[in-house]
Image (cartoon, rainbow, N blue to C red; front, side, top):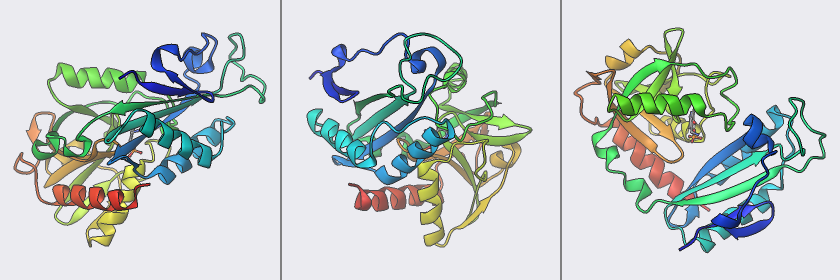
Length: 286
Ligand code: PMP
């Protein structure tokens, strides 16, 4: 089945959706994005993604391409047209096509480019890795200083993913000034006893939608939550570790830089948190 994608008001076969070479997204990575999961044909935490998209756009002085209600309708139409049960919807907004290349932003009335497409991932919530856990390596965090804005500037995270692949592990954790910031495309956590420790929100990390939900559910389940920095050495000595993202959900981490975390096998608290997260988010899906 040919994928149907969305581009600036039209639903098109993927081969017919074309964006200008002058688009600011192409020339300057002047764009922001969101990735919303679909489980059982329904959108997970759509409101959270809309709120963050609004924040990213406003931090960059970029106009919203349409209302949240219109975005919801487009997401739902793409789920239907592409017959998605489980998967993801990628959304990107760029500052549009000013017709030439210039560092200065184009006039505010330049039409933003809005692109959405689906990724079909049957069984997304049943990833086998959730049973065995991820292995990660640490790498220097050499990204820009506004990681709280979800921009399409993803070259350094891609390089880090390739470093992880070269090391035959699943992902990389960024380290800055001796402290873990986050994973290549996820937020990072350690567990000590009943306590979950994760870096506090700032410009240094993406404000994960999954992070917000998981910390809320953890507190409701009488787990303690501490938002503070931690080192790789502390993580290696923790009882458990994990990452969160809108498509990996809650994923255990069992090895960091070759050292086993806890027993080196998936522990107890992280799978419970994953179960709670998936249950609660499925109930609230729209
Ligand atoms: N940090 C980074 C750098 C990311 O790219 C992502 C995924 N977009 C996350 C954290 C997790 O965010 P979310 O839970 O909203 O997917």
